[in-house]
Length: 407
Ligand SMILES: Cc1cc2nc3c(=O)[nH]c(=O)nc-3n(C[C@H](O)[C@H](O)[C@H](O)COP(=O)(O)OP(=O)(O)OC[C@H]3O[C@@H](n4cnc5c(N)ncnc54)[C@H](O)[C@@H]3O)c2cc1C
Image (cartoon, rainbow, N blue to C red; front, side, top):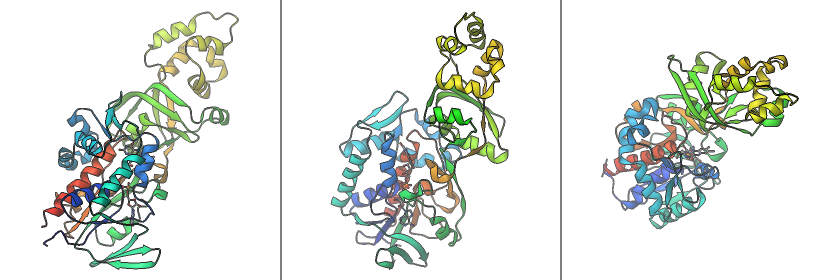
């Protein structure tokens, strides 16, 4: 295979992985065409900006790489060639300064995705990248790539292709996971797609749900044992939701909790609702005489109110609420029963996907030279914290650079 600047190069999927591949190719003088099923590019990237676009993380690099679990060995080279500093420089180059938040997460100064995406697409178009939207790949047979378009089915052939279909979460934004059917038909190995960074179902009383769905549970410590018996424990924040719990603290462990639930459900994790006060101290405070004050008013004076106080009422019988030892014990070791995890369509990202064994070191399919695969469609996962965008864009760069080696 010998590519030139006039070769027909297709990128299928206009998410951050595909767009970064387009940037590298167009910077090298090529004119790739980006196809996407949706009417506009980067819909999930835009959605990511709604809660504050977390581009990457500023922690020490070896710690950063360790966030990718088993895939870190494969992704290390990707991340060395596209580091957290590189993604910040990329944003700066498009005119957007970034900053490091208190937790180490890195954001554009305005935290928004839309202006950044607009500038990125403008730059790509000025630099000869073509876009064909409303083109959904439905079949790949021999060298014919078949798309469903508003004008019916259309066949294309290309000199090289980069596939960047995304995973299967938030499917209304474009990534539906349909690609697994297309690639399985080619005999490629795919791990089942599963939710990552998702919520978990917990049964609450009707009253608790009505009052607290949407309420953050701040400053708690979550602890549990993983499938190998290793104890994990971390301070952070959860969000009580209509169905159970979600939020950054639970997302950090969504992989380990999912594995545990798959082995045996339901599972119980424990919350320390007062991580900065000892059980003895709490017991002592709860034992103090409270005279004519109601229990709620007395608790409130100790800092026990709102969602934390009501959680306690969820697990303790009314007569037990006056037992300082029992109450203190529950506050320090609150059992939260996770019955199951939420479906992939609601998850922030996707675990599973095309196995790395199908790919060479340039992310090219070993069985299909000239066809590369990048982004969330590959078999890896990471918690929220900017790890997802850094890796998908890094893979876009890696595949495009691999493609350029076919010259
Ligand atoms: C609510 C939310 C918040 C998030 N926040 C963050 C964050 O702050 N930081 C972070 O790092 N990550 C975040 N993410 C995750 C991040 O957005 C994704 O990991 C990232 O967009 C994946 O990039 P991708 O290019 O691999 O896939 P996608 O962005 O999903 O793009 C895939 C594209 O392929 C197209 N496509 C799929 N199938 C076909 C087909 N058959 N034919 C043609 N086109 C097709 C889709 O239409 C889509 O445009 C968030 C995700 C969500 C849902």
